[in-house]
Length: 124
Image (cartoon, rainbow, N blue to C red):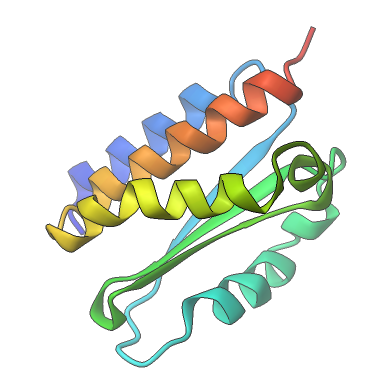
């Protein structure tokens, strides 16, 4: 992933977090042998996202060499959006990753999550 890709992702995160109480983090892991969802769940706790005040943090984990990715959301956001939302984010992002557009897939997932954060956790 290039510096430009990382900057693009950072801009997308900043844009969707602005005006919400939510928090989004992205982890790109170089491992070729990783199970993305358990790893994302561990990273979610390890990074302290599970202690985010609003219960509305999200971690997007991508393991390009393993051809896997996962999205983990905290309890308050999950209560609003449910399992179907997370599955839709993954399915909608999958074509980007399949084409090798890692940054595009991450930005797409960030924007989908951001829309949910703005709908349910907008700051006054």
